[in-house]
Length: 301
Image 1 (spheres, rainbow, N blue to C red):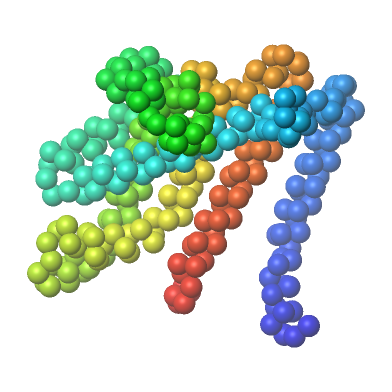
Image 2: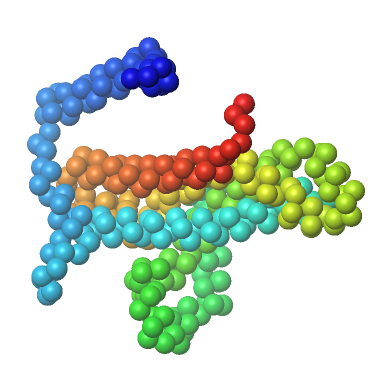
């Protein structure tokens, strides 16, 4: 082992790291003891695999079980809800830094209204009052019936079961509205973090405000916003569980249904926890890799 490797090994095993690892191991041992001995609970993990993967009776092939179906719905909700939130957050975030008072006031009203209202209330209000009106105007059932065979084949992959499309769209818009307010604040902070000299230098080149934002300010701001945006997307995955209350068949809803049928509360909740962790951990790792790639070659402070 050369000197550089030795120094790297020392960095990986600092006293604080060892203490944290021991603390985590102790907490894990305590949890195992409480759940196996002190809790006096009859564990039955054998019921879990059938809810992850099951054999289809007609074709004999392995197909996703209820929990995996719920996980796929959670993934779809997070992706589409994240896209809606990103668009809303970008628009309202730029309005927050607009020189025009009307746009700033409109953005502040949206952000403060959402941030100071419980998510549960937003879901109910939108789903039962606003969402129903929008879906009626869109006439979703007629839209699905109008589509040709090929798009209808793709719809279950992109949006889940066709018969649940109106509920899925309503839940997606609700998540987008809720998360968009937080992304708007991230965009505002990112734009405001760019030094004033960048605005002045680009203005001196004769660029309009739109050109300054597009070519000078936003590229720098986006790099600084990336960690916060990644954290918000991961938060979107977790927050999507709230639409279970309006019977959207995502992961938490499917888990509750299985618990009601089997009474295996602990096994189901622990499995749901593990599935959420795997999903969010993969996202975190991907974002870390992207952030390292974007920072490659830049001087480290």
